Amino acid sequence: MQCKLVSILGLILAIALVGPAPLASLPGTESDPEEGLLDADLVCEATVLETRSEWREDEQGRHIYTRVRLLPGRRLKGNLPDQTIQLDLQGGTVGPITERVSLTPVFRRGERAVVFLRSRPWRLAAGARAKLPIKDGQVLWKGRMISLERLAARLSRRQQEPLDDQQTQQSSQTGPVLYSIEPATGPAGVGAEVNIVGAGFGQVRGRGFVEFFYRTGRPKISALILSWSEKAVRCTVPVDVIEGYSASASSGPIAIVLADGIRSNELPFRVTFGYDGSRWDKDEVQYLVNENAHTCQDEGQAIEAAAGSWNRTGASVRLVYAGPHSRASSSYNGRNEVLWGRTDKGLAVTWTWEVSGVVLECDTVFNDRYQWSTADQPESYQMDVQTVALHEFGHWVGLRDLYGDLGDGEYDVAKVMYGFGSAGKVKRQPHPDDVAGIHFAYPPPLPPDPPGALEYPEVDLTGHFTVRWAASSQASGYELCRSDDGGLNWQSIYIGPHTYMDQTIGPGMYRFRVRATNAAGPSEWLEGQWDCLVAAAD
Image (cartoon, rainbow, N blue to C red):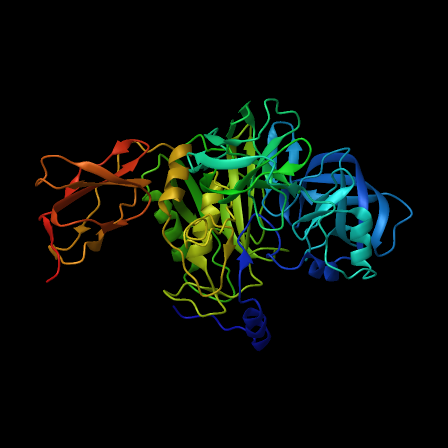
């Protein structure tokens, strides 16, 4: 790949952007929220007086705009205007059609929030979490609920001591205790149920709730409670709208909070995928590409490769390249378009138009402020086109961002739908959990192909070795079995998304077999060609 010429200034900017960056659905990286104040002319408490949506066509294309009228209250930074504040935001609902913009928060009439604004004209600040909902006179700041008075003092730099725990929920050894979560893995937004076993929950729920991790420094997501007793709580794995953005439970801690604010210990939960409930009503989605990136070539081929990765999952929807286009901005025009342009936040922004959950159109705009690459290995200051396109197409098929990091190198950092990307990194194949997500929305008509290879040693003198098998692109999981009698009887020893399993076994003769699975069923078994002799070393 031969890069297009860029200015020295652009190269310097690219180097400055190295590090985790948000892919699509939420603004900002996990940095100190006070840094966002640099971009805001006004930070204030505000009440939403009115929202009104309408179609408009301008230099940005044809979009639904929502006019939000805010009544400013307490000033936290800047000068309050003498009248109400009016914001015009892309996205909203007119008649049966809803337009969702992945980086724009939703405002609802009557809600109160702290807003970060730029002036002339009034607009949401780009460098901050632009909207912090107010709950019981408090907002979430640096991962803790604090009062507006405390926030005002911190923003004005009149108070520098660390936050204390006066306003946060308290945990107690005499409060609720979690023993286990069954199952400990599952999808969000599809009604998947989990049973939390423990003690001290109380016979009556009252205002108690179960909270799932969403994203570091952001509010937790409360689950729908199905049943509540002294020793067990049953709930679903949730999705929600958090701070105005579409959010999914992510891999991380679960806790129970009682009505009096007493909080339990935490147990980890692994989220496989988050689903927003939307879907196309056709099996072929055609898209057009404007290859107008300023910093790389062959971007259209990289986008086609990303679509091909989703197509190879065997889901009952295909993303099909339908030719070039020349538009320089997103617009509701009956065509699904991919292009490069300037966006306020994130590596890319996806627009979705839908009616009652049925998707009519999607557009994706890559942020031309970044340096892009289509090379096999991007430079340390470049973002990989195929990696980001793969993530954005995940939004096209209804998958939400995940932000967990359990430290195992997998949940959720190994997934295509992990919400952050890094310069110089590539991720060009869906994780089996990503495959499970698209298969939920678009069930595959056929089971997957079996794994292409199964590897394990013929002789082992330690009793410790690893069984490995080749991935199947249509698989959302695998099952591994072991036999100690030459294949007459088999024991299932692993079911999950990995393509390996470590073995610790005693002396004997062992044979293995593996199969791939998806929502349509299992593949044929792939059986090893020999027995592994495990013997004690001399």
